[in-house]
Length: 115
Length: 111
Image (cartoon, rainbow over all chains, first blue to last red; front, top):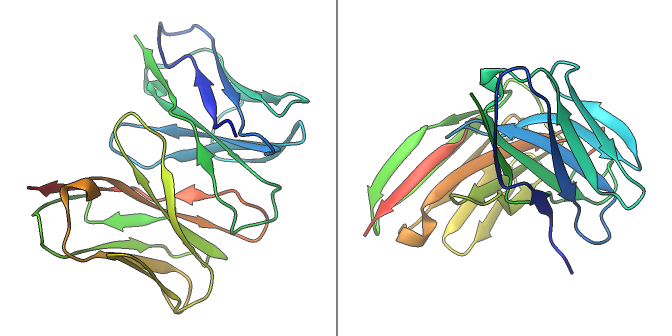
């Protein structure tokens, strides 16, 4: 069973640029959630994708967008990068939504630095 | 702004000591989970609690869900250096498994 994998692991961008982060979900999982984690803080929910549709969104502006593909892998896109976007971006896969006792399986994250 | 506030934010203790971490919210949750995150890794699930007043034990770790399902605590007995990490609570409503994480408690256990 393959775990959740994210790429790239680290990247540096400048203000105003755009970035795409990628996530492969754990085998058998059809739901992907994205989180932003500032250093030493808890992850903040960005959005969730279920069967290629957005299935809930946290308090993030529209320049944060995503996709989920038929194989359940996912992308997080951030446009017009700002300095405050510097963070660890975590992807978590899980089974169907609606099971609020379900476990989130996290990748190791993508560390984004915006200069 | 995070819905779940954890305290303390930082905790540094000697090996063998006991500690308690608190997770509080003004919201009622359908379930609450505790995760531990080590540097360079994603969070890993420790436990899920769903019933108000529920207590679960995992070796030296004891988790409690408040009667009103708004708060939770994690108690560690006889802490060990391997317990070092960032402890996160996360709550969900019954609309789906969209978990909202707490502010985190960074624990360091000194040998």
